[in-house]
Image (cartoon, rainbow, N blue to C red; front, side, top):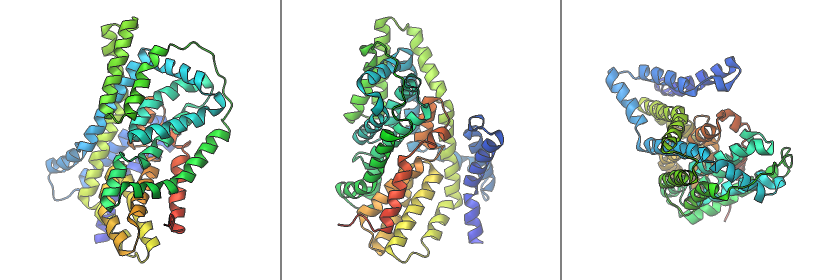
Length: 424
């Protein structure tokens, strides 16, 4: 009976995936199926499952999950990112930045250069979302200029963004992983770096020597350097560690001021561009709220507790403990669509397993962080892919098909378990 209840508690996630994937397959096109619809169906189903509560109490559980402070903070980012992207595009900042990039970076090394830039920026600012916000509009506008697939260039940015999210000392996931496991950040960095470095180098080689490398047609054009200031300022402020919300506000204000001074904008145009940016983020915001509510229902039904109890039942060795840590993190991340929340949820269990089976704290912290980035890279309803897809006006699935780095770090994490690597 207990097993049945535990499995039943997880069925809202199953309903979500079945509705979305089956609808897309029937339509033959992922663009025609809104993931928000799948979340609404899963939410209604989950609310119906919650017995022992009246309807108002059930909706209260959903609403508290949707109004989680982490989700509200992400929505702030989405709103400001949409406004900044639309304002910068309207005043010509994107076109100017693209022209400047094409003038500076040799065409044969453009994909590798974008990947390195994304890795560096995300390492410095500690957030994958901030990196995606800064670079996605640029590479989206760049794609037709260089004759390259938009989804492929956006995937390069997303992959590089996960590199820094996984390793940065100021990343939420790094802080959560090290604090929950009781290890120093530098120890986790060393262990984590040895795991993901081969993956990063392999990804860089793909971008240097892959099929799409060196096939670009560069169109010579003049560069209006001053119009690139908003994007350059956003990147510089992000590298200085300024809060991403402040970065986006400052970037938007500077873009509007430059446009007004240059005669490109009238006062009404500022509000029109801001409105267009907010409208472009509506579905993304809706999906984020629905995801928070659905996962709160799963937690209330006991789905998370059931997964944890089942996976930890037959552990008997260090490798087994590490495998369970990986599975718990992956499953929780799928359910929450948030890598930081997944790490915070699994952290106490992972620490207990590490103590029992002599898993070094730096290794358990590295595994949780690495696997959460891997899973987040393949969730079409995850914040990073939703943000990148929204800014590029493409499907998250199109981006997933070109993501190399998250898959490679998963391979390296599994090898590190098999080989008990890294060793002191």
